[in-house]
Image (cartoon, rainbow, N blue to C red; front, side, top):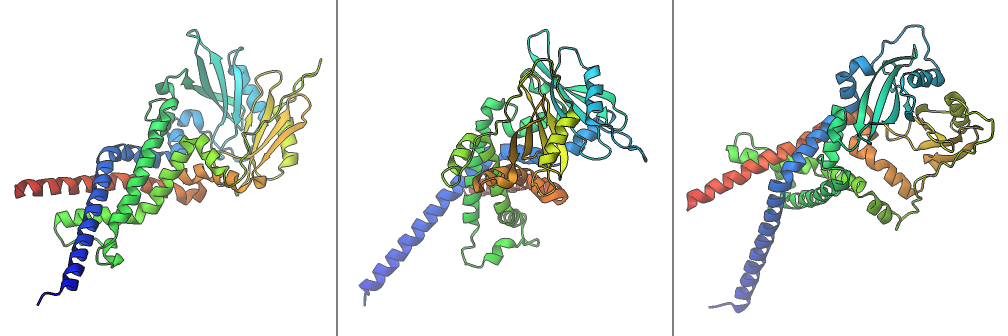
Length: 399
């Protein structure tokens, strides 16, 4: 006897299974296509990002005669005015001062950045390194000549490669777009990871005793799901920084986001000479007694101001600060204060983008972890490529 109701249920179930299988095949095809093409770029970006977690150490190691100093036993550092004066004495007379960066550790040199016009009408940026204990110049290097990315030091070339593929700052949106596409691929991969039987533990294991094809498949799935959330954060923060105006606009829908700080202008007075760096720092110390001086942006025009960055111990970033004080270069009067403690929720979110992306937010442990994350795209690409080639060979044998 025929059961029409049962036949209808079986038909519906068959159609549902076919529809689900078709949807999975489409998602798998999208995931695979993105991985094969954009994944190769992701590998290069990931590896360069992993190395950049140690960028300052690598830079110092490659340029030790310039950037490292002997640490004396009983000698204090010379004043910022002495350090700057030593650099100015070694500069061309028409150079324009940019920044004084204080040593990041006891064995590091102070850095004075400046620019000078060249015969080819391009500006060349230099970094001069000064021993902070003796106030003697150790040497200098070209930081950037015009728009020539390859005129930069090796570590800065690597940084430019990481976020622009050396295509130029104006083309960084290409990497940002790839980041968004790869973010989609990671989400689709996480969806595909779901074990069909419902036992999620099966998706976390690698059957080392199985065939090579099975080991490759398990590695791709397990590494992918273990690192998925972290990769999503890396991709999202990277794209958000590249598309900074759009990110700020989006965040402003939920929280107030003020514009870039305006540190004011100095007021020149007849017969009044500019104050020194030390006096400008003293004005900033009155605002932020704690923390260390990370940098001093130097006035390069009569109405320019000192901007002193006082980095706090609890800031998520170690290579920048959002505690900055604008100081009149003549009177020492404080003109503007940027204080991260008064940030809105949206501004705090924006502040955390770079420390999360670079791993600086997690201190010394963040750097090796970031290196591990940087290797992950390589593992996923190799295993994904092996899986794809294995399936292609299987299909050809089937023909």
